[in-house]
Image (cartoon, rainbow, N blue to C red; front, side, top):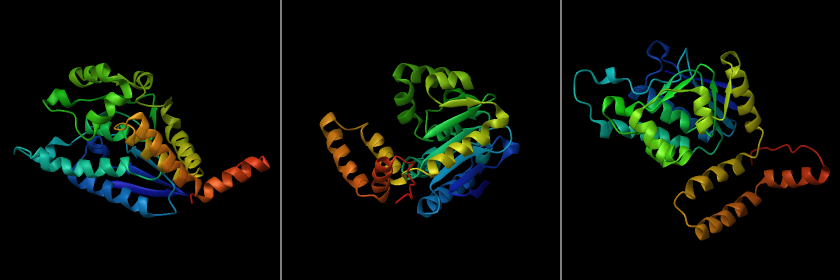
Length: 254
């Protein structure tokens, strides 16, 4: 249900339930978590690209998975939470290519990409309120930080369907491209990131997440600590050397 394909130093992950608009199941989430874990541990992978097969990115949770019974959402969300924590803690850049509708938890997963591209045909909706649920998969944490509290309340309570251009205006995606060029541009972006200072990217991601809960004084202290760590990398040495030699740096990810 999750296709994996390595393109040089980039791992392409594809949610692969096109007949169900890539609706999420426990099994799919387990596969995605395992793929993220393996990518984290593989030094040959320096960037990831996540997309969906067919005409959707993901319609969110597959409610049919629960049958006629009453779901134990608290237990089920542990699977989502493992994936979200793996995405947030991934020490490599993650590009998300939103190729079609992204709804509910599918939208949540898309938002955890470090850089997000969307096709002109993509649509976005929070969807949770439409079935009497609260936001999950980290959406309550991330969405207000992206769009502000008032807009997050609007998106969560009313669940409007946003076009790709509307999503870009709100900062939910960084770029909108024609559908036929989406994967080409997303892969090019992922490959560009895969040639960058991987450790510095990881430390930057950590710093940005941590500063949500820190005071200015604490943030300044953490910047200094992480800058010290970045300054001890081979990539920093190469960057300084390239600057002095007036050439493009050749980062190794170390």
